[in-house]
Figure 1 (spheres, helix red, strand yellow):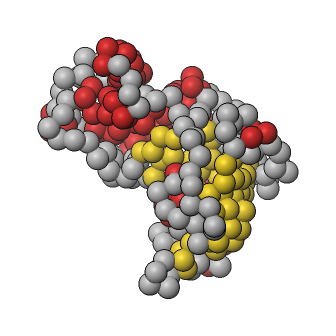
Figure 2 (spheres, one colour; figure 1 turned 30 degrees about the vertical axis):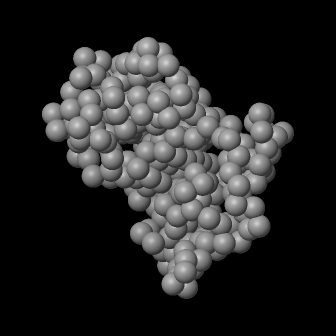
Length: 274
């Protein structure tokens, strides 16, 4: 039977966070002394209450926010073509392949679905014909075959999020960062997108870092759940979900899943009380 023991000892990491701290100019200490190793191909959820620094941590990994203290390292030993460090005294960013999915789809309303997906390829200088081909294939992969020429106003909330995911994955990133992308969706749509996300992860084997408030979502998706506490944001526990993949409705309705959720929920309660 599966369990949620403390995770294994860290090995070779794709990304390593060492004593990462973030303090904003107004004095708010958002994140303090976070140590975290992320291995290639892992699916990791950041779980915690509002205000615990999950999104701040995600943005710092993406290079969208500076680290006040500590460092975010990209070791060459993890298989990167370039090694680098983002931290105090080093404002430079290494050329890492990252995709980011925000809480809102953030689509250009005047552009079609395929034009929205093509944006990062245009920025990278990919030829138009190749960009169109890759974008159409990515839309098909997220279940939007036939909607290439639809505008955002013609799409449902779930379909807009699919376009956003396609845009993040079209550059074939090594790491996909997701900041509560399904929080505003109804339960049926959310479950379907969870399943589709796991399928894409299984096919492409990117490293996924997924921010969520939901115990149920974190257990269903993840190999690891990093539980955070607030004021200041810090890691309370790093748990392993050793349930096998693929996961489906049978797993979602199983006694094993229910027990895993209870165990993760108990850890989250401790984090909220910390």
